[in-house]
Structure formats: structure tokens, C-alpha cells
Image (cartoon, rainbow, N blue to C red; front, side):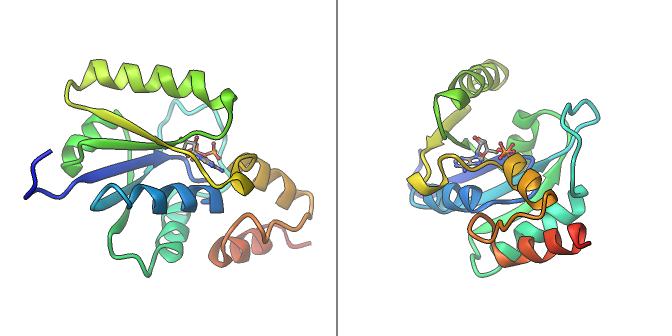
Amino acid sequence: MSVDRPLIAVYPGSFDPVTRGHEDIARRSLRIADELVIGVAHSATQRKSGLFEIEERVAMLREVFAADERIRVVSFEGLLVDFCRAQGASVVVRGLRAVSDFEYELQMAQMNQELLGDFETAFFVPDVQYSFLSASLVREVAKLGGDVSAFVSEPVLGRLRARFQR
Ligand code: ADP
């Protein structure tokens, strides 16, 4: 790492929607990176069907991180390594919750290493209160009318309420 070049990291994910767990990982990564680009991935081949449109996910992330000028939010399509190159990023940030995340994350990190030689993945561990939290769980609970205010920030809460109001 050169001393005069900022360390730019990319945090990719679906963020459907952004949770306090994602927020925790993003903020932790800024203890190491100078700038963080949050990349909202969309692909035609995605297995999971989404709740929010990509533009809405980006809008929520921008609202959540509005006060943090070191964080930018953009969407991307295609290979992560191409996105990283375009952003001038040398590090990818991922979160590790439980052992269940490990195998998939390891596979992805090693595949990306193959695709781009100077590519590093940095894993961050969330605060224990978020280690069971996932966007899919938030979607499920909100859909069933449960209170998710402990798990997502205000801009997300408002949109979830609007979406599932009966
Ligand atoms: P999710 O798995 O919640 O749908 P994403 O697909 O957007 O979230 O995941 C993006 C990255 O964020 C992954 O590395 C995932 O492990 C991580 N992540 C998601 N939720 C948390 C959390 N509560 N704590 C730590 N990392 C998380």
C-alpha cells in the first residue's frame, strides 16, 4: 500500500434493504479504509427475488450514510472485480456473521483472487447484537407485521412501513 494514495474499499451486496448489521460493517471498514464505495449488485442471474428496486436500495443507503462523506453508494452490474477496478479499489469488504457465512465467502474471495491478482478481501465481524441479523429476516418479519425498528435505520423503517401497511 502506498502512503500517498487513499485506500479505497468496495463493500458489495444486495442490501435489500440495508440493515444495522451492514451499517456496522461499513463503519468498521472505515477504520482501515480511507474511502468506502458501497456497491449494490444487480444481475439478471440473481436467484433471490428482491423486495426493493435497486434505485430504492441505493436511495436508502444514501440516506442512512448521508452524514458520512467517506462513503459513496453506487449500483453495479457484472463482475465485482471489474467494478473494483473501475472504482480504483484494492480491497473488498465483507461481513462474517456465523460459520454459515464462511464457506460461501471463502469461495467468493478465492474466485475473485483468481480473477484479479492484486485483489484482497477483508472480513469484518459485526457487533454481537447483529450477528444473527440478515436482510432476508428483516423482510420476512416486516412482511408479517413485526417490529424491525431495532434492526434497520429510520429511512428503511419508513419504506418498510409504507410497503407493508395494511
Ligand atoms: P444479506 O445476507 O443480509 O442479504 P447482503 O447479501 O447484502 O446481505 O450481504 C452483503 C455482505 O454483508 C455479506 O458479506 C454479508 O455477510 C454481510 N452482512 C449482512 N448482514 C450482516 C450482519 N448482520 N453482520 C455482518 N455482516 C453482514
